[in-house]
Amino acid sequence: MKRKSTLQRYSSADKLFLLLDIVVLSVIFVIILYPLLYVVFSSFSGGKMLTGLNLIPERFSFEGYRVVFQYRDIWVSYANSVLYTLTGTAIAMVVTVLCAYPLSRSDFSFSKVALGLCVFTMYFSGGLIPTYLNIRSLGLLNTMWAIVLPSSLNVYNMLVMRTYFRSQIPGELRDSAQIDGCGEWRYLIRIVIPLSGSVLGVVALYYGVARWNAYFDSMIYIQNRAKLPLQNILREILIVNTTVADLGMDAETEAIAAERAELLKYSIIVLASIPMMLIYPFIQKSFVKGVMVGSVKG
Image (tube, rainbow, N blue to C red; front, side, top):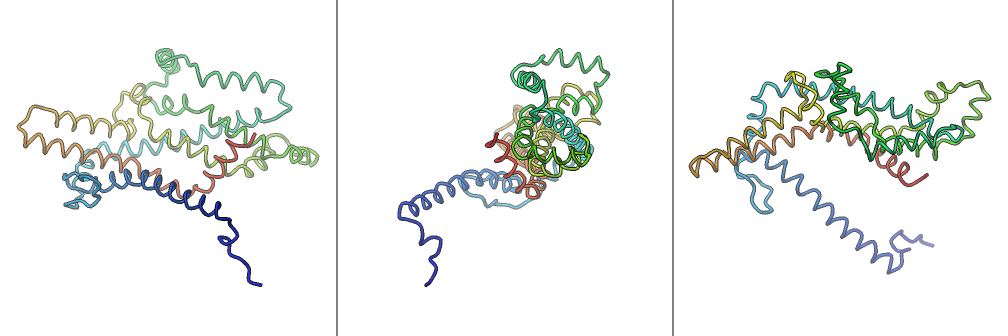
């Protein structure tokens, strides 16, 4: 007897639901994809902005990228951003693991108090001025540490990791390790961390994206232009070119300046998005698994 295909085993209601599901998801996919493609193709349009739903530039050109890379500070700031992102993410991962693991343990006496204090900081903070004074008193102004240390723990990321440790790492595993003479640090490094690859991947991505896109902290704490990250330099370029486009000019010159500012804006967006776009495909599976386990269970 011939085995029925998967589709044949579905009822008419199931088939209708699958059809509607495919249609809705396809519409959502197009809605998300079109703006991304519009930005990319606009960055190669050579100053002639795309009109309507058209995605094909009238004149393909690298003019926008050529103008951006005329700024010598771009390369220095790019290196700064890479350094800040890698260092900040590494520090944040260590701090988050060391905070999430004890809070995931049922035998930790002060876990509820410590967790409440952590959650409290999600809603209340000291404010910008006290934070600035604190950074200055510690001698961190105009250094990389003023950027990476204050943001080394995100409570939401810590809660996701805590939930994963609590729900996915069985307590019997720790009991077995202790019987074999495994200490707490060895158990964490040799057993817990290797078994938590998915949640570590998604939390690292969260920290990396946040650190890469951040510009406000460096705008407040960094005065030396040579230490500014990419986002601050790109923001400056965009503001300068937009201001030039808004100056009093005749209609034709103003239109050209406005088109140049738009072209520059799209080129900057693509340039700043490239690193995260290259990283995401490598951790996509861990990202999906980590988000689902860390947010649904527990």
